[in-house]
Length: 421
Ligand code: PA5
Image 1: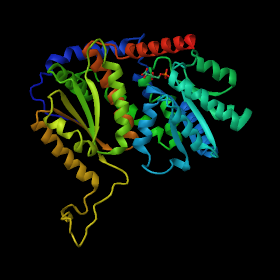
Image 2 (image 1 turned 120 degrees about the vertical axis):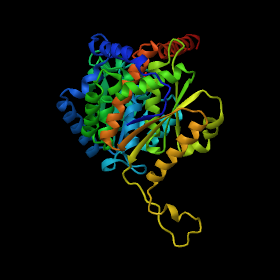
Image 3 (image 1 turned 135 degrees about the vertical axis):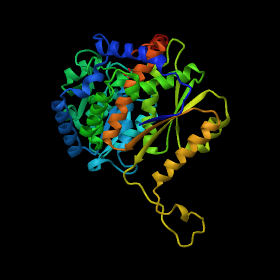
Image 4 (image 1 turned 180 degrees about the vertical axis):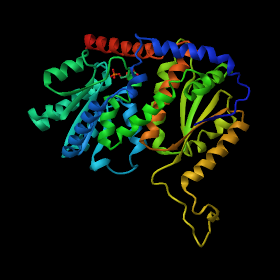
Protein backbone atom coordinates (compact mmCIF):
# COMPACT_ATOMS: atom_id res chain seq x y z
CA UNK A 1 0.00 0.00 0.00
CA UNK A 2 2.97 2.33 0.46
CA UNK A 3 4.56 3.99 -2.60
CA UNK A 4 7.40 6.43 -2.42
CA UNK A 5 10.34 7.60 -4.44
CA UNK A 6 12.93 8.76 -1.99
CA UNK A 7 15.90 7.05 -3.52
CA UNK A 8 18.32 8.92 -1.33
CA UNK A 9 17.04 7.34 1.88
CA UNK A 10 19.52 5.08 3.65
CA UNK A 11 17.11 2.52 5.13
CA UNK A 12 19.86 0.46 6.68
CA UNK A 13 20.66 3.24 9.15
CA UNK A 14 17.19 2.74 10.65
CA UNK A 15 16.90 -1.04 10.85
CA UNK A 16 18.46 -1.50 14.30
CA UNK A 17 16.70 1.38 16.03
CA UNK A 18 13.33 0.32 14.58
CA UNK A 19 13.79 -3.22 15.87
CA UNK A 20 14.83 -1.93 19.27
CA UNK A 21 11.73 0.27 19.57
CA UNK A 22 9.56 -2.59 18.32
CA UNK A 23 10.79 -4.94 21.05
CA UNK A 24 10.50 -2.22 23.67
CA UNK A 25 6.85 -1.68 22.74
CA UNK A 26 6.07 -5.38 22.61
CA UNK A 27 7.68 -6.02 25.98
CA UNK A 28 6.52 -2.99 27.92
CA UNK A 29 3.95 -3.70 30.58
CA UNK A 30 3.58 -0.21 31.96
CA UNK A 31 2.69 1.57 28.69
CA UNK A 32 -0.87 2.32 27.51
CA UNK A 33 -0.47 -0.01 24.55
CA UNK A 34 -3.57 -2.13 25.06
CA UNK A 35 -4.64 -1.17 21.50
CA UNK A 36 -1.60 -2.99 20.05
CA UNK A 37 -2.98 -6.48 20.64
CA UNK A 38 -6.67 -5.80 21.35
CA UNK A 39 -7.75 -6.59 17.74
CA UNK A 40 -6.14 -10.02 18.12
CA UNK A 41 -8.06 -10.81 21.29
CA UNK A 42 -11.49 -12.37 21.41
CA UNK A 43 -13.83 -9.42 21.89
CA UNK A 44 -16.98 -11.10 20.60
CA UNK A 45 -18.95 -10.54 23.80
CA UNK A 46 -18.22 -6.80 23.64
CA UNK A 47 -19.15 -6.58 19.97
CA UNK A 48 -22.44 -8.41 20.56
CA UNK A 49 -23.22 -6.06 23.46
CA UNK A 50 -22.44 -3.04 21.29
CA UNK A 51 -24.55 -4.33 18.40
CA UNK A 52 -27.49 -5.10 20.71
CA UNK A 53 -27.33 -1.63 22.23
CA UNK A 54 -27.02 -0.08 18.75
CA UNK A 55 -30.06 -2.03 17.60
CA UNK A 56 -32.08 -0.80 20.58
CA UNK A 57 -31.05 2.78 19.84
CA UNK A 58 -31.92 2.43 16.16
CA UNK A 59 -35.29 0.93 17.09
CA UNK A 60 -36.28 3.50 19.67
CA UNK A 61 -34.50 6.70 18.68
CA UNK A 62 -34.51 9.11 15.78
CA UNK A 63 -31.30 10.74 16.98
CA UNK A 64 -28.24 9.66 18.93
CA UNK A 65 -26.37 12.58 20.48
CA UNK A 66 -22.73 11.66 21.03
CA UNK A 67 -20.89 13.88 23.53
CA UNK A 68 -17.08 13.87 23.50
CA UNK A 69 -13.93 15.66 22.38
CA UNK A 70 -10.50 14.70 21.01
CA UNK A 71 -9.94 10.96 21.04
CA UNK A 72 -13.42 10.49 22.48
CA UNK A 73 -14.97 12.05 19.39
CA UNK A 74 -12.77 12.16 16.30
CA UNK A 75 -12.51 8.44 15.58
CA UNK A 76 -16.23 7.73 15.64
CA UNK A 77 -16.97 10.81 13.57
CA UNK A 78 -14.20 9.99 11.09
CA UNK A 79 -15.36 6.44 10.46
CA UNK A 80 -19.02 7.43 10.35
CA UNK A 81 -18.31 10.05 7.68
CA UNK A 82 -16.04 7.73 5.72
CA UNK A 83 -18.54 4.86 5.56
CA UNK A 84 -22.05 6.26 5.59
CA UNK A 85 -23.94 8.13 2.84
CA UNK A 86 -23.21 11.80 2.20
CA UNK A 87 -26.79 12.95 2.49
CA UNK A 88 -29.79 12.11 4.65
CA UNK A 89 -30.08 10.10 7.82
CA UNK A 90 -27.97 7.02 8.47
CA UNK A 91 -28.83 3.35 8.86
CA UNK A 92 -32.47 2.72 9.72
CA UNK A 93 -33.12 6.43 9.41
CA UNK A 94 -31.23 7.41 12.55
CA UNK A 95 -29.14 10.55 12.82
CA UNK A 96 -25.91 10.46 14.84
CA UNK A 97 -24.87 13.96 15.84
CA UNK A 98 -22.00 15.24 17.95
CA UNK A 99 -21.60 17.84 20.66
CA UNK A 100 -19.00 18.60 23.34
CA UNK A 101 -16.14 19.45 20.96
CA UNK A 102 -16.64 23.17 21.40
CA UNK A 103 -18.06 25.54 23.98
CA UNK A 104 -20.49 27.25 21.66
CA UNK A 105 -23.74 27.92 23.48
CA UNK A 106 -25.41 28.61 20.14
CA UNK A 107 -24.32 25.22 18.79
CA UNK A 108 -25.70 23.35 21.81
CA UNK A 109 -28.92 25.37 21.87
CA UNK A 110 -29.58 24.85 18.17
CA UNK A 111 -28.73 21.17 18.42
CA UNK A 112 -31.36 20.70 21.12
CA UNK A 113 -33.91 22.77 19.18
CA UNK A 114 -33.18 20.55 16.21
CA UNK A 115 -33.98 17.36 18.11
CA UNK A 116 -37.20 18.62 19.64
CA UNK A 117 -40.07 16.28 18.87
CA UNK A 118 -37.58 13.55 18.01
CA UNK A 119 -36.82 10.49 20.10
CA UNK A 120 -33.32 10.96 21.53
CA UNK A 121 -30.65 8.71 23.05
CA UNK A 122 -27.35 10.04 24.40
CA UNK A 123 -23.89 8.51 24.48
CA UNK A 124 -21.43 10.52 26.55
CA UNK A 125 -17.82 9.50 25.99
CA UNK A 126 -14.93 10.64 28.17
CA UNK A 127 -12.00 8.56 29.36
CA UNK A 128 -11.07 10.87 32.22
CA UNK A 129 -14.68 11.78 32.82
CA UNK A 130 -13.77 15.34 33.67
CA UNK A 131 -12.96 17.17 30.42
CA UNK A 132 -14.60 20.59 30.46
CA UNK A 133 -16.09 20.73 26.95
CA UNK A 134 -18.03 17.44 27.04
CA UNK A 135 -18.83 17.87 30.75
CA UNK A 136 -20.54 21.20 30.08
CA UNK A 137 -22.40 19.81 27.09
CA UNK A 138 -23.51 16.79 29.13
CA UNK A 139 -24.82 19.02 31.91
CA UNK A 140 -27.11 20.77 29.40
CA UNK A 141 -28.10 17.66 27.47
CA UNK A 142 -28.77 15.67 30.65
CA UNK A 143 -31.17 18.31 31.91
CA UNK A 144 -32.87 18.32 28.51
CA UNK A 145 -33.27 14.54 28.69
CA UNK A 146 -34.69 14.68 32.22
CA UNK A 147 -37.16 17.33 31.17
CA UNK A 148 -38.26 15.30 28.18
CA UNK A 149 -38.27 11.81 29.64
CA UNK A 150 -38.38 12.22 33.44
CA UNK A 151 -37.16 9.10 35.23
CA UNK A 152 -36.98 7.24 31.93
CA UNK A 153 -34.10 9.51 30.85
CA UNK A 154 -31.69 7.16 32.60
CA UNK A 155 -32.62 4.39 30.17
CA UNK A 156 -31.61 6.60 27.26
CA UNK A 157 -28.25 7.81 28.55
CA UNK A 158 -25.24 5.60 27.93
CA UNK A 159 -21.85 6.44 29.39
CA UNK A 160 -18.52 5.31 27.93
CA UNK A 161 -15.67 5.94 30.36
CA UNK A 162 -12.99 4.41 32.56
CA UNK A 163 -14.02 1.34 34.54
CA UNK A 164 -13.19 2.80 37.96
CA UNK A 165 -12.21 6.45 38.04
CA UNK A 166 -13.55 9.88 37.13
CA UNK A 167 -16.55 12.09 37.86
CA UNK A 168 -18.49 10.71 34.92
CA UNK A 169 -18.12 7.20 36.29
CA UNK A 170 -19.54 8.39 39.62
CA UNK A 171 -22.45 10.12 37.91
CA UNK A 172 -23.15 7.02 35.83
CA UNK A 173 -23.12 4.78 38.90
CA UNK A 174 -25.33 7.00 41.01
CA UNK A 175 -27.84 7.63 38.20
CA UNK A 176 -27.92 4.04 37.02
CA UNK A 177 -26.80 4.79 33.45
CA UNK A 178 -25.65 1.94 31.28
CA UNK A 179 -21.89 1.90 30.84
CA UNK A 180 -19.24 0.87 28.37
CA UNK A 181 -15.58 0.87 29.31
CA UNK A 182 -12.55 2.49 27.72
CA UNK A 183 -9.78 0.15 28.94
CA UNK A 184 -7.33 1.85 31.27
CA UNK A 185 -4.40 0.72 29.10
CA UNK A 186 -5.71 2.51 26.01
CA UNK A 187 -5.29 6.29 25.76
CA UNK A 188 -7.80 8.72 24.23
CA UNK A 189 -6.46 9.06 20.69
CA UNK A 190 -5.78 5.33 20.47
CA UNK A 191 -9.32 4.43 21.59
CA UNK A 192 -11.21 4.56 18.30
CA UNK A 193 -11.44 0.75 18.15
CA UNK A 194 -12.88 0.47 21.68
CA UNK A 195 -16.50 1.07 22.69
CA UNK A 196 -15.66 4.80 22.58
CA UNK A 197 -15.73 4.66 18.80
CA UNK A 198 -17.56 1.42 18.08
CA UNK A 199 -20.93 2.20 19.68
CA UNK A 200 -21.61 5.44 17.75
CA UNK A 201 -20.28 3.80 14.59
CA UNK A 202 -22.55 0.77 15.01
CA UNK A 203 -25.56 3.04 15.53
CA UNK A 204 -24.66 4.91 12.33
CA UNK A 205 -24.68 1.59 10.48
CA UNK A 206 -20.95 0.91 10.21
CA UNK A 207 -20.08 -2.79 9.96
CA UNK A 208 -17.93 -2.96 13.10
CA UNK A 209 -17.09 -6.65 12.57
CA UNK A 210 -15.42 -5.94 9.25
CA UNK A 211 -13.78 -2.82 10.67
CA UNK A 212 -12.25 -4.93 13.45
CA UNK A 213 -11.33 -7.66 10.99
CA UNK A 214 -9.31 -5.10 9.03
CA UNK A 215 -7.65 -3.96 12.25
CA UNK A 216 -6.90 -7.58 13.15
CA UNK A 217 -5.25 -8.28 9.79
CA UNK A 218 -3.21 -5.10 10.22
CA UNK A 219 -2.24 -6.08 13.77
CA UNK A 220 -0.92 -9.38 12.41
CA UNK A 221 0.83 -7.83 9.44
CA UNK A 222 2.49 -5.06 11.43
CA UNK A 223 3.64 -7.37 14.20
CA UNK A 224 6.74 -7.82 12.06
CA UNK A 225 9.81 -6.36 13.74
CA UNK A 226 11.90 -5.85 10.64
CA UNK A 227 11.71 -2.53 8.88
CA UNK A 228 11.93 -3.96 5.39
CA UNK A 229 8.82 -6.11 5.95
CA UNK A 230 6.74 -3.65 7.94
CA UNK A 231 5.06 -0.88 5.95
CA UNK A 232 3.82 0.94 9.05
CA UNK A 233 7.42 1.25 10.20
CA UNK A 234 8.55 2.24 6.71
CA UNK A 235 6.03 5.06 6.66
CA UNK A 236 7.26 6.14 10.11
CA UNK A 237 10.86 6.09 8.91
CA UNK A 238 10.06 7.98 5.72
CA UNK A 239 8.36 10.80 7.56
CA UNK A 240 11.12 10.88 10.15
CA UNK A 241 13.82 11.05 7.45
CA UNK A 242 11.99 13.89 5.73
CA UNK A 243 11.70 15.71 9.05
CA UNK A 244 15.44 15.34 9.51
CA UNK A 245 15.96 16.75 6.02
CA UNK A 246 14.17 19.94 7.10
CA UNK A 247 10.57 19.31 6.10
CA UNK A 248 8.48 20.39 9.08
CA UNK A 249 4.95 19.86 7.80
CA UNK A 250 3.25 16.71 6.57
CA UNK A 251 0.15 17.26 4.49
CA UNK A 252 -2.27 14.35 4.39
CA UNK A 253 -4.35 14.61 1.23
CA UNK A 254 -7.12 12.68 -0.44
CA UNK A 255 -9.69 13.23 -3.14
CA UNK A 256 -12.81 11.72 -1.54
CA UNK A 257 -14.67 14.18 0.73
CA UNK A 258 -15.90 11.28 2.89
CA UNK A 259 -12.35 11.23 4.26
CA UNK A 260 -12.25 14.85 5.45
CA UNK A 261 -13.02 13.89 9.04
CA UNK A 262 -10.65 10.95 8.83
CA UNK A 263 -7.96 13.54 8.13
CA UNK A 264 -8.93 15.28 11.37
CA UNK A 265 -8.56 12.03 13.32
CA UNK A 266 -5.11 11.49 11.75
CA UNK A 267 -4.14 15.08 12.57
CA UNK A 268 -4.95 14.61 16.24
CA UNK A 269 -3.24 11.22 16.43
CA UNK A 270 0.05 12.51 15.07
CA UNK A 271 -0.15 16.05 16.46
CA UNK A 272 -0.80 15.09 20.07
CA UNK A 273 1.52 12.12 19.98
CA UNK A 274 4.56 13.80 18.43
CA UNK A 275 4.40 17.54 18.97
CA UNK A 276 6.38 17.90 22.16
CA UNK A 277 9.77 18.95 23.51
CA UNK A 278 9.96 21.50 20.67
CA UNK A 279 10.04 18.65 18.15
CA UNK A 280 7.72 16.99 15.67
CA UNK A 281 6.24 17.29 12.22
CA UNK A 282 3.24 19.59 12.08
CA UNK A 283 0.40 17.40 10.75
CA UNK A 284 -1.82 19.27 8.36
CA UNK A 285 -4.47 18.09 5.94
CA UNK A 286 -5.87 19.07 2.58
CA UNK A 287 -9.00 17.94 0.82
CA UNK A 288 -8.58 17.66 -2.93
CA UNK A 289 -9.89 18.82 -5.39
CA UNK A 290 -11.15 21.66 -3.16
CA UNK A 291 -7.72 22.56 -1.80
CA UNK A 292 -5.94 22.19 -5.15
CA UNK A 293 -7.83 25.35 -6.03
CA UNK A 294 -6.96 27.01 -2.75
CA UNK A 295 -3.73 25.86 -1.17
CA UNK A 296 -2.37 24.01 -4.23
CA UNK A 297 -0.37 27.07 -5.26
CA UNK A 298 1.45 27.13 -1.92
CA UNK A 299 2.14 23.40 -2.01
CA UNK A 300 3.64 23.68 -5.50
CA UNK A 301 5.60 26.91 -5.18
CA UNK A 302 5.56 28.20 -1.61
CA UNK A 303 8.10 27.82 1.21
CA UNK A 304 9.75 24.39 0.87
CA UNK A 305 8.73 23.20 4.31
CA UNK A 306 6.26 20.46 3.54
CA UNK A 307 5.87 17.01 2.12
CA UNK A 308 2.71 15.30 1.11
CA UNK A 309 1.08 11.95 1.89
CA UNK A 310 -1.56 11.08 -0.70
CA UNK A 311 -4.23 8.65 0.48
CA UNK A 312 -6.24 6.86 -2.16
CA UNK A 313 -8.85 4.07 -2.25
CA UNK A 314 -9.16 2.30 -5.60
CA UNK A 315 -12.88 1.57 -5.23
CA UNK A 316 -15.61 3.78 -3.85
CA UNK A 317 -19.14 2.45 -3.36
CA UNK A 318 -21.74 4.39 -5.29
CA UNK A 319 -19.12 5.76 -7.67
CA UNK A 320 -20.57 7.45 -10.74
CA UNK A 321 -19.53 7.17 -14.37
CA UNK A 322 -19.34 10.29 -16.52
CA UNK A 323 -22.25 10.15 -18.97
CA UNK A 324 -21.81 10.27 -22.74
CA UNK A 325 -23.39 13.38 -24.24
CA UNK A 326 -24.10 13.40 -27.97
CA UNK A 327 -23.73 17.21 -28.05
CA UNK A 328 -20.28 17.15 -26.48
CA UNK A 329 -20.40 20.94 -26.23
CA UNK A 330 -18.06 20.80 -23.24
CA UNK A 331 -15.61 18.53 -25.11
CA UNK A 332 -15.64 15.99 -22.27
CA UNK A 333 -16.79 12.91 -24.15
CA UNK A 334 -13.25 11.57 -23.98
CA UNK A 335 -13.97 10.97 -20.28
CA UNK A 336 -17.35 9.29 -20.88
CA UNK A 337 -17.86 6.00 -19.02
CA UNK A 338 -14.92 6.61 -16.70
CA UNK A 339 -15.91 6.82 -13.06
CA UNK A 340 -15.15 9.90 -11.01
CA UNK A 341 -12.84 7.86 -8.81
CA UNK A 342 -10.89 6.73 -11.89
CA UNK A 343 -10.55 10.36 -12.90
CA UNK A 344 -9.44 11.20 -9.36
CA UNK A 345 -6.81 8.45 -9.53
CA UNK A 346 -5.34 10.12 -12.61
CA UNK A 347 -5.68 13.55 -11.04
CA UNK A 348 -3.77 12.17 -8.03
CA UNK A 349 -0.93 10.99 -10.28
CA UNK A 350 -0.87 14.40 -11.95
CA UNK A 351 -0.79 16.08 -8.57
CA UNK A 352 2.05 13.82 -7.40
CA UNK A 353 4.07 14.59 -10.56
CA UNK A 354 3.46 18.32 -10.31
CA UNK A 355 4.28 18.52 -6.62
CA UNK A 356 7.38 16.36 -7.01
CA UNK A 357 8.53 18.74 -9.74
CA UNK A 358 8.01 21.53 -7.21
CA UNK A 359 10.40 19.60 -4.92
CA UNK A 360 7.64 18.51 -2.58
CA UNK A 361 8.32 14.88 -1.60
CA UNK A 362 5.27 12.69 -2.09
CA UNK A 363 4.40 9.49 -0.23
CA UNK A 364 1.45 7.51 -1.54
CA UNK A 365 -0.81 5.29 0.56
CA UNK A 366 -3.14 3.13 -1.50
CA UNK A 367 -5.90 0.82 -0.35
CA UNK A 368 -8.28 -1.36 -2.32
CA UNK A 369 -11.68 -0.15 -1.25
CA UNK A 370 -13.25 2.51 0.93
CA UNK A 371 -15.06 0.05 3.20
CA UNK A 372 -15.11 -0.94 6.87
CA UNK A 373 -12.39 -3.56 6.46
CA UNK A 374 -9.86 -1.23 4.84
CA UNK A 375 -10.66 1.67 7.15
CA UNK A 376 -10.05 -0.61 10.16
CA UNK A 377 -6.77 -1.69 8.56
CA UNK A 378 -5.74 1.91 7.94
CA UNK A 379 -6.59 3.05 11.47
CA UNK A 380 -4.33 0.40 12.92
CA UNK A 381 -1.60 1.17 10.36
CA UNK A 382 -1.56 4.82 11.39
CA UNK A 383 -1.60 4.09 15.15
CA UNK A 384 1.34 1.72 14.79
CA UNK A 385 3.26 4.08 12.49
CA UNK A 386 2.60 7.02 14.78
CA UNK A 387 3.96 5.19 17.80
CA UNK A 388 7.14 4.21 15.97
CA UNK A 389 7.51 7.69 14.55
CA UNK A 390 7.25 9.32 17.99
CA UNK A 391 9.88 7.00 19.47
CA UNK A 392 12.19 7.68 16.50
CA UNK A 393 11.84 11.33 17.42
CA UNK A 394 12.59 10.52 21.05
CA UNK A 395 9.23 11.57 22.50
CA UNK A 396 6.54 9.71 24.41
CA UNK A 397 3.55 9.18 22.08
CA UNK A 398 1.14 8.48 24.91
CA UNK A 399 1.08 11.70 26.90
CA UNK A 400 -0.12 15.21 26.07
CA UNK A 401 1.48 17.61 28.57
CA UNK A 402 0.73 20.61 26.35
CA UNK A 403 -2.98 19.88 26.40
CA UNK A 404 -2.87 19.46 30.17
CA UNK A 405 -1.23 22.92 30.44
CA UNK A 406 -4.08 24.50 28.50
CA UNK A 407 -6.66 22.68 30.62
CA UNK A 408 -5.00 23.85 33.82
CA UNK A 409 -4.71 27.48 32.75
CA UNK A 410 -8.33 27.58 31.66
CA UNK A 411 -9.46 26.00 34.95
CA UNK A 412 -7.41 28.51 36.96
CA UNK A 413 -8.92 31.45 35.10
CA UNK A 414 -12.43 30.05 35.42
CA UNK A 415 -11.95 29.54 39.16
CA UNK A 416 -10.53 33.06 39.53
CA UNK A 417 -13.46 34.52 37.62
CA UNK A 418 -15.77 32.76 40.11
CA UNK A 419 -13.99 34.40 43.07
CA UNK A 420 -13.98 37.88 41.56
CA UNK A 421 -17.64 37.78 40.54
O1 PA5 B 1 -5.83 11.71 23.12
C1 PA5 B 1 -6.19 12.15 24.18
O2 PA5 B 1 -5.88 11.63 25.28
C2 PA5 B 1 -7.06 13.39 24.26
O3 PA5 B 1 -7.23 13.97 23.00
C3 PA5 B 1 -8.42 13.05 24.84
O4 PA5 B 1 -9.04 12.11 24.03
C4 PA5 B 1 -9.31 14.31 24.97
O5 PA5 B 1 -8.66 15.30 25.70
C5 PA5 B 1 -10.62 13.94 25.64
O6 PA5 B 1 -10.37 13.35 26.88
P1 PA5 B 1 -11.46 12.54 27.67
O7 PA5 B 1 -11.84 11.37 26.87
O8 PA5 B 1 -10.78 12.18 28.94
O9 PA5 B 1 -12.63 13.47 27.87
